[in-house]
Amino acid sequence: MPEYNLAVIAGDGVGPEVVAEGRKVLDALSQASGGPTFRYTEYPWGSAYYRETGRMMPEDGLELLQGHDAILFGAVGDPDIPDHITLQGLLLPMRRAFDQALNIRPCYLHPGVVSPISGKQPGDVDMVIFRENTEGEYAPVGGRLYEGTPDETVIQTGVFTRRGTERIIRAAFDNCVQRNGRLKVTSVTKSNALAFSMVFWDEVFEDVAKDYPQVSTESLLVDRASMDLVRWPEDFDVIVSSNLFGDILSDIAAVVTGSMGLAASANVNPGRKHPSMFESVHGAAFDIAGKNLANPLATISATAMMMDHFGEHQSARRIDGAVARSLQERKVVTGDLGGSASTTEVGDEIVRLLGEG
Ligand code: NAI
Ligand code: MG
Image (cartoon, rainbow, N blue to C red; front, side, top):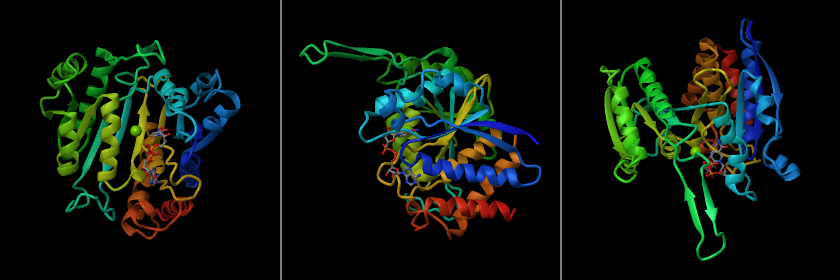
């Protein structure tokens, strides 16, 4: 029976609440005969740690994480600490240092969930976003000159490498071939305005597409793609996009398929030399934090992505099945989906459904 050595960073806001439910589900898996088992190491990093130490994680934080098989992550963010400090102090360095180049974000309209877009039936919306995760617009390259003077000058540069661009696009095509049904990859750029980076991206996309003649392709400008995600979300299959655009499009896709509280995310290191990280798409959700109101299903679905990553496909399907059943039955759903259940009640319900097989 394999044992996986997991790092747990619950972080801030609703992070600890939803991660606790993710762990509950993993523990339930280990109780099944022949199921995988887990050894957890909790790292109490985030905004509280920053208040005490001036850092979001210790100096040797990345070294401590390196030895783990995977990282289960909650969220970072604090109303009193600037977001660039919380994000650049913990989440983004992890993605870069561990070369978690592929940010994979599936969005599916489940039976029992109502889309805010009228007339959409369960299964109509079924897409996965491949977001470049280590460079692009989020590369910390730039500077600030003459701060506080009338000559103040700020430069923020995007970084696009052939290696980084090609591997996210190739991963999107590979996934598209593996997925059943629709066979389309949509590349989302803004090459009319960003005439270096995005024109380059389009060229790489065309090159890679030649290796997948069976897959239809489409290139959309990001403004148009945002509109289409709302009016025709059923047209999308696999979307591939840069770090910034993929980030924005995944929030749109999440709400179109019902809620931010359902959207899971894997940050995958393609070479598997470093741990991959599994988390929800959402952030610290200040408005509902500490109230046992957050929907934990995004994090729970992220644990299913972790199981797939480990090759524990049967465990992954069990979690996905329990999530789908709970949504269809609608007996225990949180406020974002129109119910009144608490975070912990939803976690308990998933564990109960896992027990039923
Ligand atoms: P957010 O994703 O935290 O919240 C957006 C909206 O979705 C809110 O109305 C929230 O209540 C709702 N929501 C989020 N998660 C939910 C859940 N599990 N169940 C039900 N509803 C949920 O985005 P926002 O408000 O822009 O960011 C808040 C903080 O989180 C900021 O400090 C931001 O920097 C940080 N953040 C961190 C991320 C991360 O750690 N991966 C990702 C996004 C934001
Ligand atoms: Mg985001």
